[in-house]
Length: 260
Image (tube, rainbow, N blue to C red; front, top):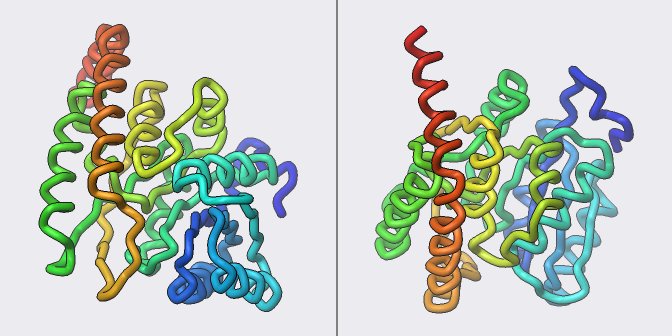
């Protein structure tokens, strides 16, 4: 690993993959990432025996692949929190979050890395570009979240807070994890983006193709996860109110800087 790689000026990224029972797609994703010589950290969120066997084989047969295991299923957010902290502890400066289910276009990896090199303090957010495979209910629901995120940050800096394809600057991200706990499940991605925006982390948005593979395995629970997301937006809107003067002042300064 890259112990001590957080020295100023060093760019040491890794890929971070949370996984829960995606045994049929994980190998292709890992192989594609390793083709870019990107170290891969997998966080197994309590997967079944068949998936554990696949992961053990990947670690044994492919160099540069590292595996963390949670003792039981705790949710995507908990798996990501574990992986982000571990990546930072290992000395990586950035972590490229990507799903295990084959939805994300790995040919965009060089674009994420180039954007992070150019803007090392920024959160590089994937902005999902869908084809006809996307479920309409999921698509329309995302627009509701987009609206609330713009309200919660008092800006349009985050184009897509729900896309799980993004590149984190680990120093700021882990500082925010240490400040207050983050959601354990599907509401993690949005809350993390909003809280990093509150922290003053710059946002960069990168268009990327996202597909829903035929017969793909989704762990999104329509009722429970939508209730969690609704509670999250309530919490974030309330959190925005005391921060509103600072957020508006920051936005004004940036607009003036752009004009100048």
